[in-house]
Amino acid sequence: MIKVFHYDRSTACQRVRLLLEEKKLEWESTIVDTARGDIDDLPENYYTLNPKGLTPVIIHEGKAIPESLIILEYLEDKFPTPCFRPDSAEDKANMRLWMRKIDDGIHVASRTIGVCLVNRHIYEEKDPDLIKKYYDKMKDEVRKNNDQVNIEYGLESPLLPNAIAQFKKLFTEMDNHLKTHKWLVNDNYSLADIALVVYLQRLESFMMAPLWSDLSYLDNWYERISNRNAYKKAVLDWGDITASKRKENGLKAFKKINQYWLDN
Image 1 (cartoon, rainbow, N blue to C red):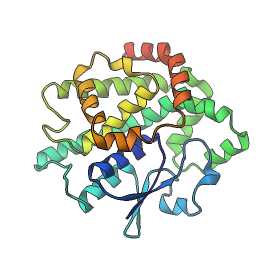
Image 2: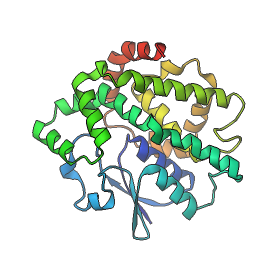
Image 3: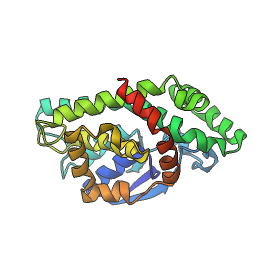
């Protein structure tokens, strides 16, 4: 049995759940919501499992594996059927180049958007001492420093325009590629599709889907994945406990976000 530490709306957790469901693997759920400053709710040994204190983490055969992209590759190695890696070395390289975009800035950009639009409002409702403790224990210095800027400035954060620009660049690149390919790696639904689709769901939850309404090939790709049974079980069925705040604050922010999008 695979034990999974995760929570509902995390993109990193969603992609791991999606692969688990695509492979029809049995897994045991442990909710660890690391996004709202509630670090007192972490399991006692959580920083041993993942020194960053983030999700997801899986435990399999007595070993803890953190980092969602590493988990995807681990699961593919351990449970190769059905296969979500292409056959050729060239296609494997292309798959990993798509996935590399996540660590090259997209995940940080996603966090920037989330904090500017929603998380900063959630933190305002929390005990300030709890939030201080949360950031004092945060190991990722980039995440910590960016959060401080984004909490202070919100929609006027100097980091927000570039975050939006990164998504526009990525989505446009994906759309252009998908004009001539069924999936991100030729005709293979792969780890690349699983890893990246969660960002469309994230921005959609912030009421941002109109931004890419003219990217029809990207939208079709997203629709095909979101109609898969595994996606429904891994993403939609888990819901989002911050959904109302995402909708409310996303609608308020849309004019500003749309202008950042148009400026790039």
